[in-house]
Image (cartoon, rainbow, N blue to C red):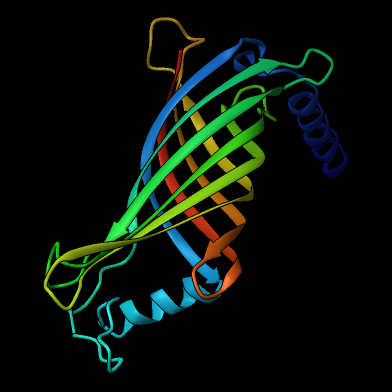
Length: 229
């Protein structure tokens, strides 16, 4: 009986792996929107600005090096929008290859309101893969990687009470992995509504005044709803 059960399980596993999910047999064009939060790991200016926010201090320092207390900053959070295109790979069942672009805009303001603010925005674009490993379950995995520009903005008031901005920009690379599930609520069952969780890691070289080349490393977690049409 034990051998029979093992044999049945092996047959089911083999069938699941070698059969093809119907959704992976059709071209997919995606548009998605979701909520994202970045995690800032390393970088001289990246960490310095994060320390100021953590201490509730203004980005602006007067001639004596003093900074005003602007209150607590909230966590960096924002929204993300993505478009992607996938084409089936006939020789590898369940696999689709294509390209993806994802734009994320996040920010945080302290208790004083719009007088101060920090905005952290990043873009990801490159080659992408989507894989449905199972026949009867619409669970999928994604992987994409390529270029990843980043641009930030510090907003603050100077000694004359005038609002100023300090911008930074850099280009680097990223790799992103995702897991999700495709729902088929539409009459056309090749069109899906995907729910997915993404994690990306980025490394970017940024030119910063007074520092020069500053290597930034950061990641982001994104919960996204995607329509395939």
